[in-house]
Length: 459
Image 1 (cartoon, helix red, strand yellow):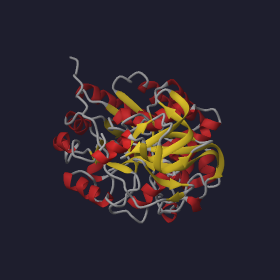
Image 2: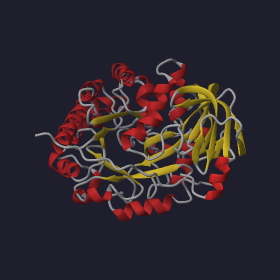
Image 3: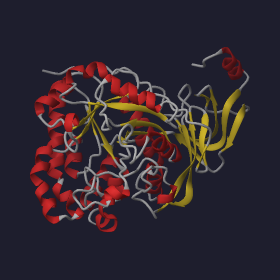
C-alpha cells in the first residue's frame, strides 16, 4: 500500500519513481516484453505504457527478473570480520543480483538469544546493501525459548547444526533435536551430517592429509543417516523442515518421498564442481561441508532440480582467508565464497540448457519466498516489493578474484568464463547497482514474514 497521498496522486497520474522500459519481463503470465513501473518501493504497473518516471532504465535486450533471495550466507559479523563483514557481503550480493539474504547464526557471539539478534539488526542498519534477516541458532541452551525467539522481527527462522559446528550450536542428540523441533512452528533449516560418524572417520584424513579424501571422510552415509534422523523427528513433532545443501543421490531419493513436509536446498558448488577434479585443481579452496562429490551424486542433484525435488538454490557463502585455506588439510577450514557468483554461475547453466530460466527464477526467488513465507517478495507482480535484477543472457564475462567484493578476496570460480550476467540490481524501486558499479548508499532493511500455522500431527 502506498504510504502517503502524494504517492497516491502520482499513481493516478501515472508518474513513477522508477520505470524499466522495453525489457523481457518475468511476469506471472510468463516472459513478456513490457514496461514495469515502481513507486514507493512497490511494483504499481506491469504494463506501464504511457507512464513517466523520475528515473528510467532502458532495458532493451535484457531480461527483467525478480531479485534473487539467497537464504544461506555467512557474513561473519560480529566476531570474524577478518574473513568477511556485513557491508562487503551485502555489496557482493547486490553486485550479483541478490536483493535479500538470510544470514547464519555461527558468528561470535553466536546468535542464540534475542539480544544477539537485536545486536545483529543494529549492526546491519546502514551497512546492508540488500534486505536481510538473521537465523536464530537452535540448541540445547535455548530450545524451550525458540517458539518466542523465532517470531522476533528480523528472524529468518531456526537453524540447526547436526554436525560441522561447535559449542552451543552443535545439536547432535535426538533428545535435543526433539526439544528444539517441539518449540516453534516455522519451517526449521538444518545442516544434516552425522557428527558421531564424522568423529569416527576423521582418522582417515588425519592419516592421509589429502583433501581428495574430504568426501571419503564426510561420506554419503553420514549425510543420509542425519537426514533420515531429522526427517523422522520432525514428522513426530509435526514440524516443517528445510534440509540445506543436500549433496548426495541417496538423500535426494529419500527426500523425494517426504515432500509433503520437507523442502530441499542445493548449491551451485555441488552442481558445478565435481570430485576428484576440483580437489586436484583447487586443493583446499574446494573444501566445504558437505563436500563436493563425484559425478554420480552431481547427476542426481541435477535430476532432482529437474523433477522438482529441489525447492531452493542457496550460495552457502562462507569465506575464509587464503592464509587460513593454505593450512595443511584437514586443519584447513571448510567453506568458500559464493553470494556474488550464484546468479552468474546458474545463468551459465541456463545457457548450457541444464535448466530453464523459468526454473531458475523459481529456485532463486519464488521458491525461497514460498518456503519461508517472505512477505511481498519473490515475484514481479502488483503490490510486491520492487526487487528486480536485469540480466544480459548473452553477455560473456570471466569471473576473477579481483572482481570479488568479499573481504577474503577470492572465489573458487576464478578464471571461469560464463555466459549470462547481472547488469543492474533494483532494491525496493531504487537502482543500487548498474554495470558492476554501486549506486548511492546502503538502504537494506529487515525482511517481514507471514505467519505460518503449525502442522497437526496425525496419530
